[in-house]
Length: 77
Image (tube, rainbow, N blue to C red; front, side, top):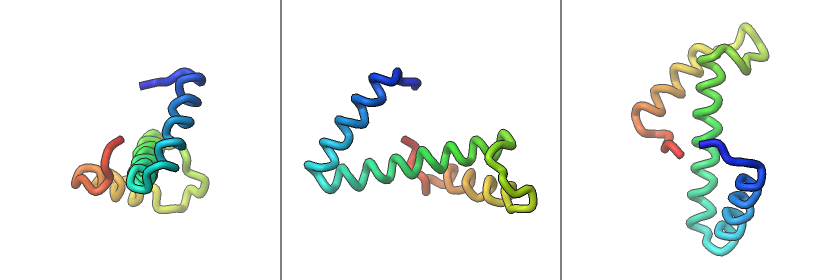
């Protein structure tokens, strides 16, 4: 789902308010944020983007991220 700038800003504002009120929600929001970042990283690696060093272990990293996703270790947002 793609949000408009206004919707994204409003969503962040609400998330910040809820996280400030409830530590459990703050932890869950942080888990979702990390999950989104890892999924985005895996997608970028699969597309051949985000590789600063051509000698790094990008294929290995991609394989590990997808295995984590498939095994349910990374909760999807």
